[in-house]
Image (cartoon, rainbow, N blue to C red):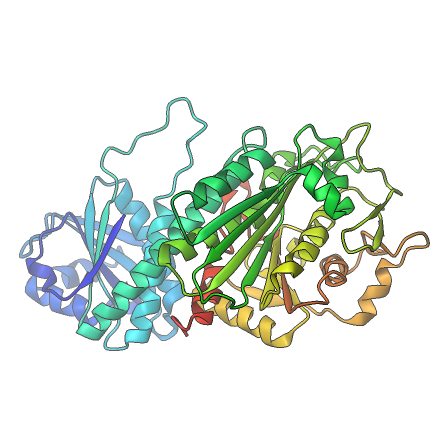
Length: 499
């Protein structure tokens, strides 16, 4: 998709569709009012019929409007003007682009709904472009006869009111398109079934991502190499699988030589049946999404490379399958992690933390400025936060605030949970340094983070539990691409390219 931001008279511009935002009570925006005047009040007359009430995301198509060069005019509801923001605009424009993508319109012109505020323009355009990328995403790689859209939406032009707005819009479009492309990569990887997206396949995709990019280097560690490093915890998970585990390291070197990188560590369980502690059959197919944390690292690294961000970033993805087998982990087994700490495996379905802990220890060698791990780690996080916010826990308050602010700014939000020492006792084991699950049913998200915190004492660390946000279930089943927007926003802010 191509995105442009410019000045212009909407009534005179030739396009397949003009997109005009309307607030509740039939309130047109400034550019909308100017267009309505040029059309002799045609929009106002339609609004008087009250068929359209401007609820956020509501759309109404008008064909062959008189007095302008557009073939169509799409009214899109923006909701209440008093609470209007970038998130509301993104929701409205996602509905608009979904309607347009199936209409035969190959291009459209959208009138920006705000005035001279270029900071708001940045957020509005970014939300709209990310909405366009989401609305036009399709995953049909595994269908024998994919449905072809013969005239998909290919170009979106935003009309602004000032040169400063144009500049802000162009910057936002570039950022959002890279985030959209990264999210698309993350969704594609996650939506693939486990028989196709194996740890080896993920490793190959990492190598493909680095091909031809001098700033990006990929290293793949085999099971033999991990064995020599003492990664007994990570390797214990893959023992029940015929697919060998891989440790995928992607180094993006866009910053100054020697400057400490930000490290992103993503859980890459390409399928999780629970091992000997096998999961219920219902919805087990969705456990192909247990690698969404790793997929988000792929997507974020891809966005960094596309934007050529002036920062060093390391992506580490431990990848494995967790299946039942005669050689699989058993409840009560004790393994030794790369850090030397021993772990009693009380539940083999708490395997994500077993592969992450060794990956976190491995990450120490990069002397990172900050580490964020991303994982579909606990069902308890879904109980606590549902599907709106990712869970956040951290050993550094400043880093936690950075992550929270980034999520709030881009609409990919997180919510912080406590990481108090009092929770650590839930991991006590009579036979090893720690158990891999907490005692009792309460605070599962917190005790999982407590477990990981024992491997992060050497650096500033934040943990994102994305179990509720990484994919949608039901009739709209599919990966969301989160938290690629949050992670990329975090890095943009570190580069001082947004605020």
